[in-house]
Length: 91
Image (cartoon, rainbow, N blue to C red; front, side, top):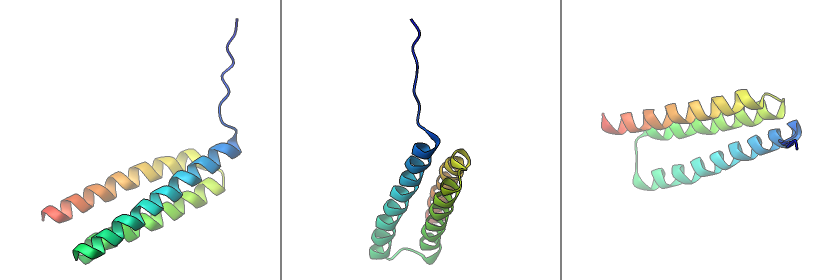
């Protein structure tokens, strides 16, 4: 017996990654609103603005078919942004 493993079609993968980037954008919006309520620094708020730009860029990459690159950029970018936010709070 052979088992056939069906993955996502390229179109489904693009839509999934665009959805993930959109959810990340929505999550950053919620965090940004919470940060504004706490009166955090302009540098920290600027990082969340960069996260919005990053999410938009990933959505555009996914729309153009660069889904794997977009997902790598999204994960790497968010790790760097969250690390920078943590570092800025410690300084």
